[in-house]
View 1 (tube, helix red, strand yellow):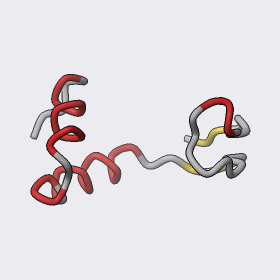
View 2 (cartoon, rainbow, N blue to C red; view 1 turned 120 degrees about the vertical axis):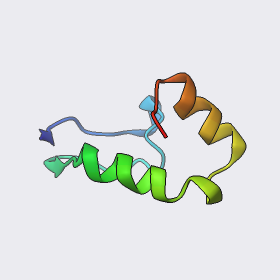
View 3 (cartoon, helix red, strand yellow; view 1 turned 60 degrees about the vertical axis):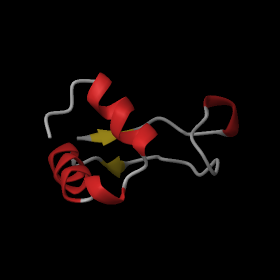
Length: 55
């Protein structure tokens, strides 16, 4: 999956870098979050859990 949207400061995308044509590997990201759960902030774990993350 790729995204063609440009990220800017007004949309809360962080550094304001353009995210044009960036490939998104959702499965890899989810696995990384699961593997790093112990090092994530409590707030991040809470938010991911609220979104339905299965740990």
